[in-house]
Length: 278
Length: 273
Figure 1: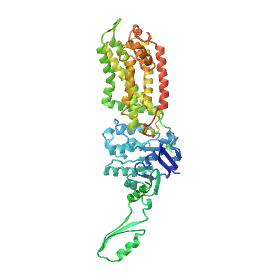
Figure 2: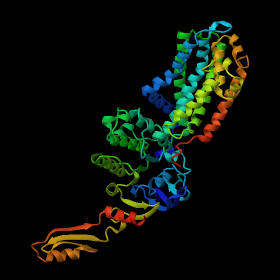
Figure 3: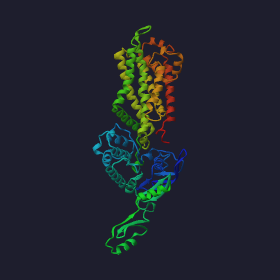
């Protein structure tokens, strides 16, 4: 059975249709990405799945229950990493992780979670003394200490430096490797490409594309072949680059150089997708 | 799967754990601790020294003692109503409530945590105020059990009413930044009109008629009845201590506070819908 099943989800704020008919299925063990620009409806969608917001229409099942009416036992099975949180500033990392672990029927060992999140050195530091990246790792620790089957990560690395992002990504990969289903929202393309097995692109409250990071938006359909020879620089878009490559290398042209075959970058695809919907 | 068979932690257990964390966090905010506790005592010291003369017609009682007794009501309002209202507003703002909402912790557990916090801080506040009253203004602690019994039920009803109303009032403030301003205005107005910062005998009848609808007047009157000689009852609006009516009014505010609490408690602020 799928972990998340969504059909025709709708949510309106006043006159603004934030989510306009979304269908989604997330299978157990997947890392699923929701990609889209600010205001695309990502956070609204996720907050409905998390049980934070009521929906106006559509069918939603998360772990087999309707998040709008699901109870405490359901909440013990999900983990939520908040987009921004500054709470518990006066508590130490260990205190807050232990405290939150106490809410759950079968929590993970708090010290092991602190270790997993790379916070062992900071276990006795108050939250207000942590850097932005460390603070987000505390949020992840609090999201997973209950031992969730399904973890929601909403814009997890906003404001991270590159090294902190890489560390964070490896943490997410190790959680996925343990079998946790992960739903990730982001407006960073490289993040979704690095982590997600499958993704949808949202724009204007609708899904404008879905697939894997490799195939989304027809990424595999065309490649750009570029090279330089005595006549100058050339660039051609072709469906099957092998034919052109064979022809080029068959010429035995001593001036042939800088030969490159590139698939359209995810960024090109993405900008096309969200551009079309505007 | 183990999570299906292991029972969820009880609301009481989670609530007490919330209480420990609330108290820890409160006492680690050193400036908040100092100013929360200092304000009522500071006002008591000011008023006590300004009005340090014998009360007209009562040679053995000083005006400062009347203030010291009634001001306990302000101490409770300060640590229960204002601190809780501001605290919950802050919890909405910084993500505390949002985080709890996504866990199996219940709203009841959160509120038990607040009750633990209020009980600890209010008892500390009252101890401090009584110490100031006894040391500086010769306030006499009662020696008979009956007066301490009155003190007990008065304290319990006052804490419950103020806490519930503080929880309800936290929804009035749009943000944590505006909460202290929003909550302090009605509180200060009631301290004056209920005869806490001024002698109640000096107030116009119309003013006490209005303030008699609210809990503060009854709390002040009740605490004066605990710490002052019975002859002072003549100074009250009705000329007597009115214990029965005090209990009724405070109990009614507890009930109303609970209803308001249940009707208005929000996990998030108004910006999220």
